[in-house]
Structure formats: C-alpha cells, structure tokens
Image 1 (cartoon, helix red, strand yellow):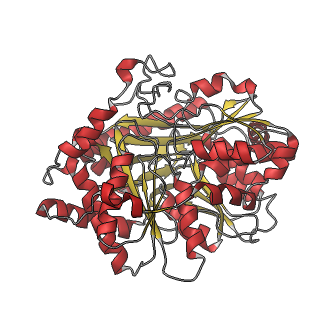
Image 2 (tube, helix red, strand yellow):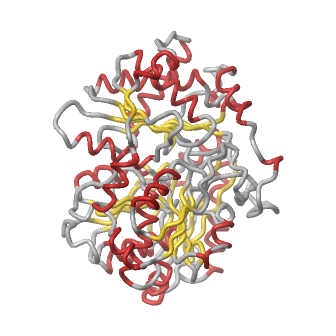
Length: 545
C-alpha cells in the first residue's frame, strides 16, 4: 500500500504521538524474543540491526547475542586492539550501549566509550577508528548504537570494521547468523554488570579531536571570515554537543537552533506518514527550520546519529538531497587541488543522473554502487574516490590533502560544506544547482515509500531482468535492466530499468518495513509520473508473488 501524506504531516507532535520511554526501556529488559519467529531474529539491513523492544525485535537478548558474535568475529579476524563504542539519543541506545559494554568487558575486549550522559555521532566513531589505526599497533574497530533517523520507539546497532566503515555483507551475515544461533541455543553469555565496571571503563573524548580536526576537511577560516549566519539544528540527536563545541571554540557565527535532547522528540514536526522521524531530508520533519529559513544565511539539520544532512537556504528552502550532492560534487572537485587527479565520484544507483552529468563536467570517472555506504569504503580508504554520496542525504569526502576523513556518512562536514560553498563563491548551493539545471536541463526525480511485509520485501529483493517484459518505459525504448551495480558488479537487491531519458529502481528498504520506488525523468513531470505508474505495475506483480 502506497503511503499517502498524513493530514498532520509537518505539524507539531501532540502528546498522543509520543512514546513512553520508560515503557520502551522496560520492554527491552522484560520481553524475550522468540528465535523461531523471523520478525524477532537478528537481521542486519543496510545499516545494522534495527527494531523496537515493544515488538520483541530489539531487546537485551538480541544485543548480548550480537555483541558476543562480534567478539568472536573480531577475534577470528585478529582484531585485537580496542573497540570504540558510541551511542545516540534514542531511548533504547543507552540500555543497549550498557549491555554491549558488559559483554565486551567480560570477554576481555578493551573498550573506549563516551560518558553515560554524552552522545556520539556515527562519523566521530569512524574518525576515531581511522585515527587510531593510522598508528602502528593492534587495530581497532567499533560499534555505534543507533537506529539513525528511525522513530523514537526504535533501537539500532551497527558494527564498524577496522577501516572505520560499516561492516560489509560477509561480516554482517556471519555476525547475524552467529547471534541467531546463540539466541536459539539460549546460550549463557558472560557479562559483567555495568554498575560494577563503569568506573573502570576507559572514557574517550570523541568530540574534541573530531571538531579540532575539521580544519583538515572544511575551510573553517573562510566561513568565519565571511560572517555568514549559520543555524545548526541537531534535531535532538548526537551532534548537539559537537555543534555547541563549534559555536564556542570557533569564530563562526553559528547558532545551535535547538539544543534540546528528549527521547520522545516532543519538539518535532511529524514526518510525511504522520510519525515522528528525525529525517533531515524530509520537508515535513524539517518544517520548523524551513519556516525560519530567512533567519540564517545557511541552516542545517542532522538526524539522530548525524550521518545525514539537510541543507536549508533562504532562496530555496530545504534542498533536495540529490540537488545538494550535485552542487557539492561540482564545488569540491574544483576546489580541492590536493586530491588525487584521478579520484572518482561515487554515487548509489538510485541517486539522480544529474550527478552523472556533473561528474562529466568535472572530468571525473563515475562509480555507481548499490544502496549502502559500505560500498564506498574501499574507495574512500584508498583515495580512489574523492566523494561518495547517497540520495538519502548521506555522504563523505576526502581531506584537503587527499587522505581519508571518514569511511562512514558524515552529516557535520556536509552541513559545514554548504557554508564553505557560500562563503567562498558568494552563492548558496541551491543557486549553484540552479546553474547546473540551466546548463543540463531540469531533472524530475521522486521517491515513493510504501509499507511492505518482510515476505514482500524478500520477493522484491529477488527481482530479475526477466520480470520486466516490457520493451519500453514511458514511451522510450528500454536500454538496460540492472540487477547488479555498474560500478562494482554487486547485487542491488532489486532492479533498475533505464532508458535514454529516464529510469526507475525498486528495492526493499534496509532499515524499515517498507519498499521504495525511485524514478527520474529528463523530460517532464508528466513523464516522471508515467515512469512511476509503470514501475508500480512491475512492483505490484512482484509483491503478489
């Protein structure tokens, strides 16, 4: 069923929309998952294991089993250095963070953690791993406890490899399988109670070294000298302390728009489907910041773990993520002389084809990969990718000197880059995108999110070229039907159908019980609608089995 915009989308949350954090946390400890129920198993999507304690999908038993599996996996990989662990502001993140530390400590793993009342963005964990592993000695890895932008009732748990990036499929498959074995066996997992070990856990300051190092990747001086008025909204997430640090320790004219941390997210406006969701790419979730767009020269938002970005300009309001990625790529490859001359542009295959055109404009190779930031990690580590970005408003890029910054999405540097672009060019990123459209023509792009069961998602993920019997799409000859990405030949978990003037892709969500149809037309909005209608027919046939 296609999600129709809720009548209260973009309006402030009401009491009836809020979770009871105490009930969510109590369920984490009290509810025991049924390991024979597929909906209660450990499942790693595109960004870790996610679910709600209220649904027996994210509970103490899950986290103990996943952590025990990670202990075994890292030992098998000879990862003997410390493990960096961080958490975001979701109600379930604190309990899961403590469970993980209990298991890790009992297993003899050296843990580096923030304080109980601190929060850590995903990119800060990635940065810490990379910085540590540049030194000689036993290599480190990490865990980020976050469901990212998911609703307040959810919890999430991600494992990052020694390269600092999200674990690849080989790792997550092994960890999930082993964790489910432990759940099925009801095996006792050694733990040391957090209250007994808290004083002995090594506390790590993620914030200060990360923020100080930002000058290696962003022209902070140019931003400060420009006098730009910047409004940064953490949306109640883990970046709040980082934006406060930047406001206090730099000369940028930066205001932290809303420093409130509330696990209910009572201050949010509702997302398109009527749920509270910290999606900084959603005009409905970002309604408050958009309404105040004229108060600042650049306004930005981040999701709960700060791996995504939202850019608001006075002239355009909230930028479409594809538009901002296009403008950012155009700017970066013209203003980073220290990058390798052959560093390529990385994009997911569901991102706008405007990025393809920009890559050609800056004379760089385009590398198209499946959805999931893990596919960009090898290129960002080696420097063969200067930039990697997803249409869902997640990206990272190299330092000025061409070395790796992070290998996970970084919402802070993408937010600051919008100010750098404006400061150094005198035009906002949205104005630069307008110029790109004037050069290449208008791109009509949209994504449809619809509810789907786990079984329906599996059927959609198994689509193959033979499921597309049509020879044309919206009147144009079909030139390609992809089930593997052109850039690395990896399965896309769905399919993409392309013509010379448009395309659509259909795939199951890796983070929620939804499926997604992405489509783009280079002709008109009406042509886009026709592409979407024909895409829905392909998806409906797949979902009906």
